[in-house]
Image (cartoon, rainbow, N blue to C red; front, side, top):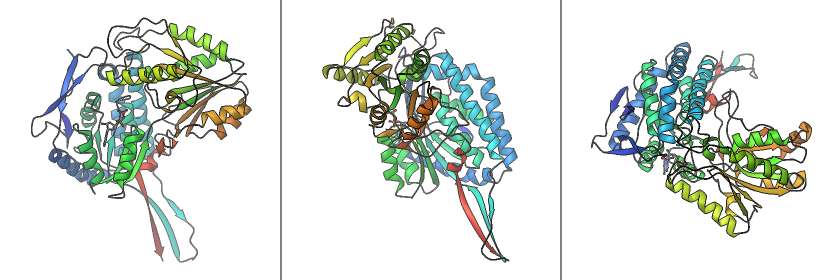
Length: 477
Ligand code: ADP
């Protein structure tokens, strides 16, 4: 059996909970136990925060080139250990190994990207009103950053926060999701190996609410970066008031996928499969609502259905699997409920012919046609391999339907007419729009949402600003 890291990484050491309590981690495909990790006590977490805040003093004063070199080492080590990390991700999260490998490379790219940004945190000199005055703008690291991360990308979501924060000169403490802490703990070990000073990168596990409360209320934590549900995001916003803490929030999504009547349907199907079935539909940018022009809906549905039938649903460790299990039985029950309720309200269900392995977490890829805005499936994040289909008659209606959501993360448009797609994309109320493209996540591009999908951007040249504060010096000569 594979050995997993099962202790927390605090101040450069592997630590247990001071009361020895742990909780179990299991493979979602088989329910087989993988390992147990510490359920830290509140005093353990307070101490970890304390040490991480002290480490900021060392890290912020290191030359940017040294910080950059260490980030490069992390990227290189991740690439060397690609298989090891991929199998840990698949074991605890369930996604197919090929996707897990992609996630490891994606995470490594974040460390490489931000190693390059670390040496380009330039300030400004601004012309002043008087000839005897100078105005200088410095960019300084904000201080200790706490991250709360989700289970759908156990490595990548952590990497895109950590890489930017560390590049900026911040120390970092992370609380991974309770379903998938093993990858995060492994990254803790790797970061130390790569030469990060003790205490600069820490991973704590335990009760989410308790750890969240300590992060939010501690004056030592200067910034909290979170990826997860809008519901928890709102709790964090409320709690941030206590210390006026800076936040970055990547929350839920409800992505529309507009298929115009002039779309290349082959390409649209290809994009739909990637945009819907990646990670078994459990990503915040996954397509939630397919909005298809009435003239092509029949062809689109037939082609989509035929393509879905070819998907292999199975244990992610099996190299043939395209779609793994859902993260838990509760997740399965939630997706079933959304489909059932839509059916009761008049939607037509087209289940796929895919063979489904035994196990309560595998969900049959399904098309739900004739979806209407009155249905819950229209408004809620499905987070499963279910395609909800609705139709429209013209561009105006497509835009109105697409924007009919509290979320504003990602949207997609398929059309051969690029000018029409550009005009439509400018009217879509989303932070990211893919035009004839669903592979929108990349380290160079600013990832993030508007409306109730959150605020702040990750990755790209903008991502590092989330971890910097501006200081202006007014100098009288
Ligand atoms: P999901 O429903 O996808 O699991 P959550 O928002 O519940 O999304 O979880 C995302 C992360 O937020 C996880 O690490 C989880 O443990 C953490 N979390 C959940 N509840 C709270 C809370 N009250 N305070 C802080 N973190 C929380």
